[in-house]
Image (tube, rainbow, N blue to C red):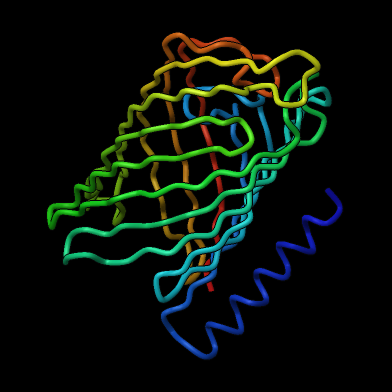
Length: 246
C-alpha cells in the first residue's frame, strides 16, 4: 500500500511530460468518497475513500485506481488498467484492455489478485446517447462476463452542466472463484443490472466536482464472488469526487 502514492505520482509525471509534447495527451487525477464499493453488482466493501490517476492520448489509456475502506476488516483494492481504442467508423469505437486487480487482506480463500482481459464496442450518436457491449475474461478466477450498457448526457442549461445517466445489465460465470482455498474449484453464475446518475460540475479551469447516485441488483449471486463474502441483492450508494485535469 505504501507504493501507491509513488505509482500515482509517477503516472501524473508521465502525463505532464506527454502533455508538453502533444496536446492530445491528457492526465486526470481524482480523489473521492463512496458509501459502498460495488463491482458488477457485487459488494466488495462498505464506505471507502477512493483515488485515481489516468493518462490518455492517441487511443491509449492507462490508469491506477484504488478503494480503501474505512472498515479495518474489509480489503483494500488497487486496479491497474491499460487499454487501446481504435475508431472503426465515425460512431463506432472498439477498445481492447487489460486489468490487474489487487486486494489486501481478503476473506479466507478469496484471491489476493487476478488478471482480466476485455474488449468493448461503443457506439455514440450525435444526440448524446452511447451504447456499449463488452466481454471480459478473468484468468485467475476462470470467469467470463458479458455486459451491455447505455449512457445519456442530459443538458442542464440553467446550471451550465450535463447530467449523465447510465443503465447496464450483464451476466458472469466463474469456475474457480476461490483459487486460494484448500478445497477444489468453486463455480457459480449470476446476472445483474443497475443504473445511476452523475453530475459533473466544472468549478475551475482544471477542476471538476462529480456527485453521483447509483443502484444495482443481482440474481443468483453467491457470496463467493465477494472478497468480503457479501450476499447478493439490491444495493444503492452515493459517491462524491474531485477531479483535476492537466
